Image: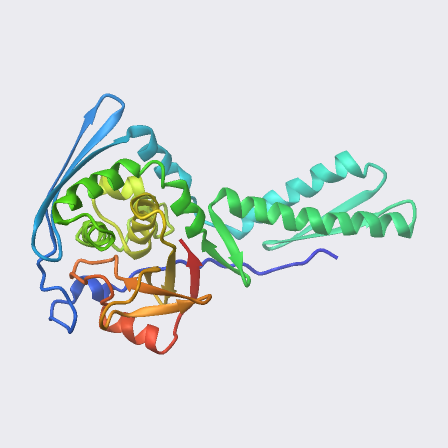
Length: 323
């Protein structure tokens, strides 16, 4: 028998308190990190971006780079909202196509019960019917997986998540010019791993925070692709997290990354050696230093917003995914 599942969507939406929090907390950078200037303009088929950002020490950096206009346009069209009904229709279409091609000797009867697809099969004998049903089970599962993959989503324990791993990988190459610009800007401070990481974190963290409630911006899923985030110069926690991950793939290629999904929030982890009292998380035998990407309050590497820290300490973690 085909498995009938109930599906729902789950996406990390940042803590609004992050945008409102103003009081200084232990370990918080003293608001030295900030975005000073942002500009962009067209240059042929590219968009030129020109940022001035102060890092966590208050040192100003100019970060200028180009992105292809096509990458921004593709980013706006890449992600679509998940729909139970749309997935059921896609699955049914695959089942019908398989039966036409591989089992013309059976007579199917499809039933739609809300968002579920049911099918009954009549055939020349019981053995053939069982054979076809077993094959349809595999087609059913593959069709679901293919539908989610096209949407850059994945099913984890019957909950639908954005596939942050694939998204960060997908945008590593388009965001390489930004990674190169950050590396060049960080070279004045020595250019070691932590200097580059700190400047990359400050770059995204100091972008204006936006909960992405405007569906014309986020397409109804509370997430925008990294090139669109740069084009808008604003974003929420998981949008900034994926963009930071994509940049760090080029900026620090030897480091592993994770995204940690908490109730209504997301942070990034990197497998650096912990320094001092930096907050970290042990995941699959490897320790990751944690970072806030949402902003706008400045939190240096390994320092967290108090609510985030409380979630980590109490293990209120929804999901950890490689980034």
